[in-house]
Image (cartoon, rainbow, N blue to C red; front, side, top):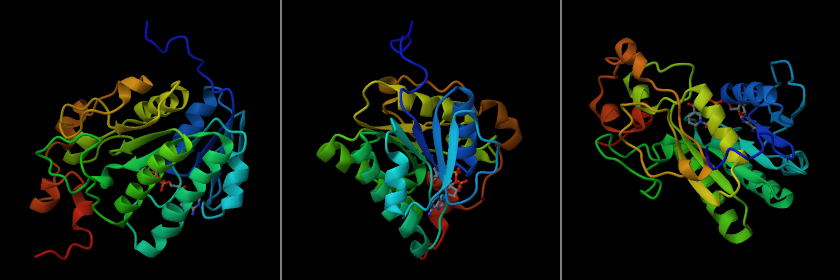
Amino acid sequence: MSDHASEATVPDRPVLLTGASGALGRVLARELGAAGWALRLTDIAPFPDALPAKASFEVADLVDRAAIERLADGCRAILHLGGVSVEKPFEEIIGPNIQGLYNVYEAARLAGARVVFASSNHTIGFHARSTTIDPDSPFRPDGYYGASKVWGEMMARLYWHKHGVESVIVRIGSSFPEPVDARMLATWLSYADLVRLCERAVLAPQVGCCVVWGASNNSRMTWWEGDARDLIGWTPLDSSDSFEAKVGDKTSGDPVVEAHQGGAYVKIGWTRA
Ligand SMILES: NC(=O)c1ccc[n+]([C@@H]2O[C@H](COP(=O)([O-])OP(=O)(O)OC[C@H]3O[C@@H](n4cnc5c(N)ncnc54)[C@H](O)[C@@H]3O)[C@@H](O)[C@H]2O)c1
């Protein structure tokens, strides 16, 4: 029997899910809703699906601190997935991903809530694929988006050390219905593994401020090690291996892209000789 077998499977207070109308937010809303979780869903875009039984939805902009604080009030945790999720000009990122992270952490502090932060492999995208790194390896963001996720991870550390706000930082690889190229055979995180990871990140008794690599049990994932999965009680159950024949030879053909963990993002806006 696992150490976590006697724990509740439903949080004792509501959970705020930002980015609820996005690709991963909709998956989490559906699955955690079906598991009986009381969810407060929010996004700047309308929620396109039927609301789960114990869920409510409110449109809010992450830069609206009062709205985020009100939504988080009384919550056990904030599953923070909202914001700019791809590489964009800095001016578009600064509101949701910089100011927004301050607002989310202030809201968590006031509510006594834990944050599960959807960080990204693009915080470390300039590490070589030939190396294996752990959560203490240096940040090497591969764009403004990745740098904004580094900021989020720094807010997690600040609010833990100064205020005791707990965080599970999930450095998501590629969470899509299935891998679409050779790189994703390493970085793929199945939706089911994502849901189980978020469940554990909310329900685990004590997490401090920790990092978990968001990738399934893929044979090609040799880049990342040494995270907090045992602490939160998560084991990925899926694997990209069965997609090897389908996408194993789909590469970019660009040696810089193929050399780095961040893939195509490293070449966006690239001016180096
Ligand atoms: N999907 C992946 O493979 C992957 C990989 C690494 C990290 N992530 C992170 O996971 C999270 C979810 O990813 P996704 O693929 O579902 O992205 P997504 O773009 O589908 O969803 C992001 C949501 O955030 C909302 N949003 C944007 N600006 C906002 C604002 N100012 N106020 C409120 N809401 C706002 C958008 O409307 C959208 O619904 C993101 O934070 C992303 O950076 C995802």
